[in-house]
Image 1 (cartoon, rainbow, N blue to C red):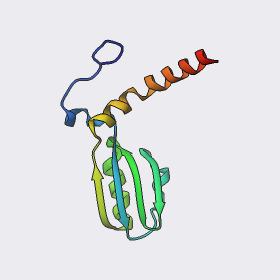
Image 2 (spheres, rainbow, N blue to C red):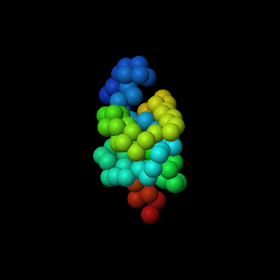
Image 3 (cartoon, rainbow, N blue to C red):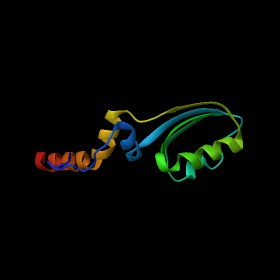
Length: 105
């Protein structure tokens, strides 16, 4: 629902395309080029450990990039219902916050 209208319907699994998957991985070497890969967000690198979010449509390509370096461990977590909701509404929430800030001045 957005502004009183239904904009998306489906099961949690069906709606997961709307957001990102969280990845945590221990690699065999440095994650070369991962930061420039489309769909990668909030990349954190600590030695050979990486943590980031990836757009669902780019997940396959990003996993192929990781395997080029060598993957020693990998944890993948799909978005929660709350994350789906917030991601879908984040532009509306940001606009609303901007309106409130302008009114407060």
